[in-house]
Image (cartoon, rainbow, N blue to C red; front, side, top):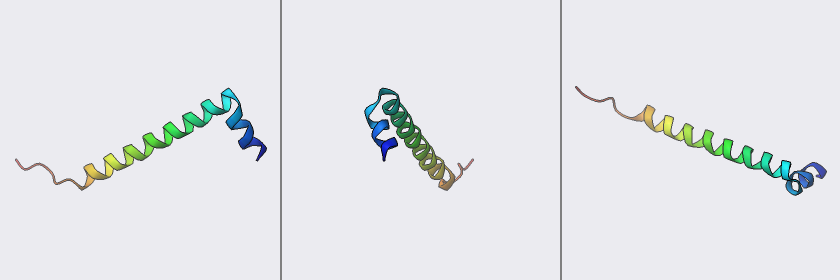
Length: 45
């Protein structure tokens, strides 16, 4: 609990938390895009 309190109160902790959140969002968006692309029909020639 002390680690969480320190993370939310210091500048370095907030930047770390922001980095973790942004990286998680990027991974989720990439996974969604890749899954949608994998389910598309191939283009017909």
